[in-house]
Length: 222
Figure 1 (cartoon, rainbow, N blue to C red):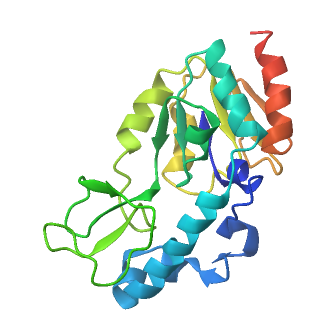
Figure 2 (figure 1 turned 90 degrees about the vertical axis):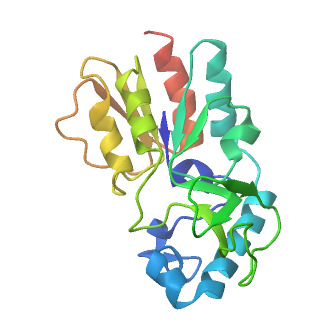
């Protein structure tokens, strides 16, 4: 499974792609890039402090729960572009966060050593190595450390499902190309992105919650 912002949107979490490059009123390049952080670190920290509060208030929706229920009949691995923990709270066991996690932080000097964070991060908050603490988020213009692991998961898939993503953010959007050509593929989205050239693909044009109902019916026939 590859999930994107569309599945969390039904829990009230917005995506910048819904508003022409603005995310909660912010220019995404000011709050989600290394250069934005360098220019105004407190602005970036405040932005993610607000996102952390938003995620804490949000609840898993029916699509998150439906994905977890698939574990009764399938070995399910979820690769998510989302930084929230709604898949975990919805009951899913195997979740890989491609773009980081809002409830983790790390030093600017160390990408590997992370710490849980439920409150705010401010300028001057330091890790044990002396580095400023920052959200454990993969920003635009940064490498995606979990990409190779995600590719391995997709490469071995018997069934591949894409839910709630525009397939416009790379390298995440390229993952569908690593799914075996002959395996059944499904894409669920309110606005189906271009998928020309992808074999064995069934498009379900619907919200994540409605699309998951349809998917569960289709999976019975496989």
